[in-house]
Image 1 (cartoon, rainbow, N blue to C red):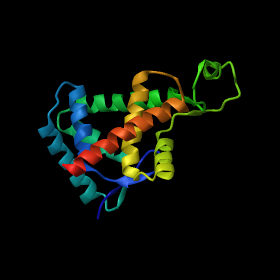
Image 2 (cartoon, rainbow, N blue to C red):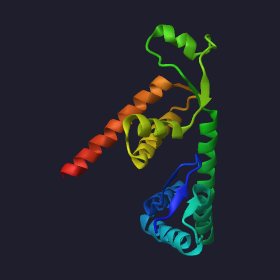
Image 3 (tube, rainbow, N blue to C red):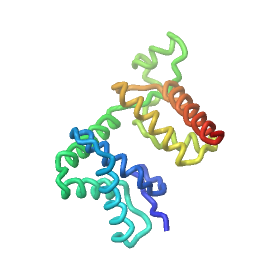
Image 4 (cartoon, rainbow, N blue to C red):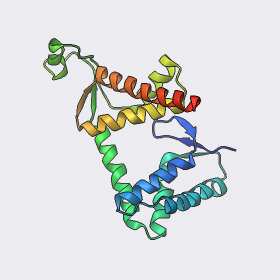
Length: 191
């Protein structure tokens, strides 16, 4: 039976062992010890534990993160476990500081509303799951692909270091990322 992961936003997706490998290798890299071989073996331990010890078919992403940190800590990679914790907290803080202004800036006249001179436009907190829902509902993109596109978009938004972003800009980034994913998928199919 395929293990299901309950994400922080409440959505459910299949458990991917490769994501755990990537997370562990990134944590090792944060402490200047990148090693895919070690990451694969530690990920095997995490996956084994999840499938053999949990006696359930779902697990939260938070529990998986805790198990990864425990495995790193108990195998002599305490600095990588700490780096993973710090990375997770930094991302959480960055996400919480971003507000989305519901406007599509098209010209100079729209800039006033973007910078607050027009207080009538609604704002909301950054929420990657809204992108996923939009891609699934409006464009019938499979949820796992939509999550990948939303993650790519989020990386770009977080890297900008902005505290206010317009829905128009988000939409443009999402569409560009979707085009990259669709092109890669098409190339993979023809290869």
